[in-house]
Length: 235
Picture 1 (cartoon, rainbow, N blue to C red):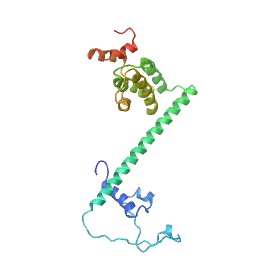
Picture 2 (cartoon, one colour):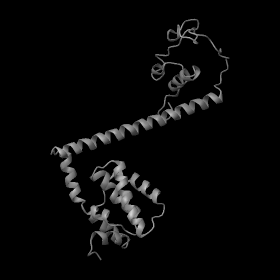
Picture 3 (cartoon, helix red, strand yellow):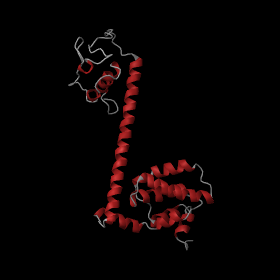
Picture 4 (cartoon, rainbow, N blue to C red):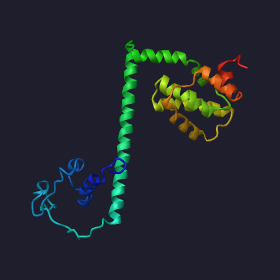
C-alpha cells in the first residue's frame, strides 16, 4: 500500500489495459482483483470478433515472458502515468459531484423560497444574514487598503458560510467589489488575491463587528479605513 493505493492491484488493472492495447473489457479492468484475474486462453476464440471482417477471433500469444526478474523502468513510468491520470480523473469526478450537490441545494433553497417553505436551516440562515447585515454595507463601498484582509476574513466567509452562495456566485460578487476598490487604488496581483482570498474563506464564519474593532485596536488602527466605511462616526 502506497499513498492509499494498493500498487499490486492497480498494476493488474493497468497491465490488462496496457498489454492488450486498450482492447480489454473496460468493465472488467475497472474491477480486476486477485480474486478475479480472468485471462483469455491462447487457442480459444474471442466471441466478439467471430465473423467480424478484418478481425482475427483466435486468441494468440504475441510475446512470451522473457524470464527477466526486474520490471523495466519504462513500464514503471507507464504505471506512474496511469496512476496519476486516474487520480486526476477521480479528483475531477469528486469536484463535479460537489458542484452538482451545491447546485441541487441552491435549487431546493430557491424552490423553498418561492413556495414560502421555511426550514430550520433557512431560519438559521436568516438569523445570520441579519447578524452580519453590516457586511452588505462593506460590499457597497470600495476601500483603498486592506482589501485582501476583507476578502478572506469578512466578505468570502459571509458569502460562502452565511448567505451560502455557490463558489462561482461568491467569487463573482467578490470580483465586482474588488474591481470597484481597484478604481480608487490599484489592487496589486488582482487575480491572485481574489483567488487565494476566496479559496481560504469557505471554512469559517466572518469576523463580527466587535471582533473587527478589537483587532483594529490591537494592531494600532490598521483597519480604520474599514470601520470608517461601516461606522461613519467612527474615530
